[in-house]
Amino acid sequence: MAARLSEKPKARVLVLEAGGSDRRFWLRLPVGYFKSIYNSKVSHLFKGAPDEGIAGRQMDVPRGRVIGGSSSINGLIYIRGQQQDFDDWEALGADGWSYRDVLMHFRNVESYDGPPTVSREHRPARRIRSGQ
Image (tube, rainbow, N blue to C red; front, side, top):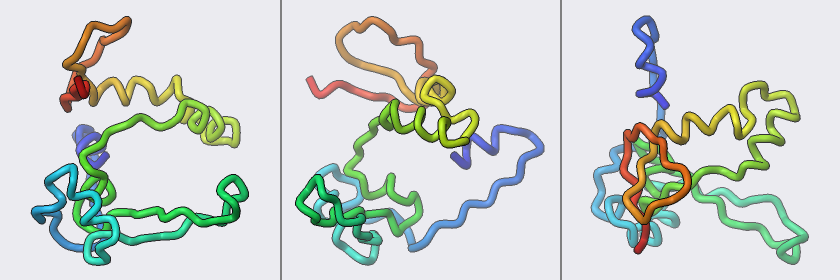
């Protein structure tokens, strides 16, 4: 996000993150996810609210505690958010946050190296590969 904001010539961007460097061995491997999410040096392990859908249990919600934030501890996984979540946020008053509004931003950071699909009109900043 900071890189995107800094594209504006007059913008000044300050990034503040909790924790230290993300240049740790286990943060650079997908399998490192399981070594990092419960490590208090690199992860805040929050608890979700009790949820009746899972018998009143609370889910663990790990969040990154290193430079790079949660993207440093997510096992190198990229996924778009749920369309309905974005549309709900806009319905609650977050103008400009509908899925249709944010879709172009997803497309700006994606490319696709896999079998042909119906729609791939991306200008990639990152490469996304299929698991095939």
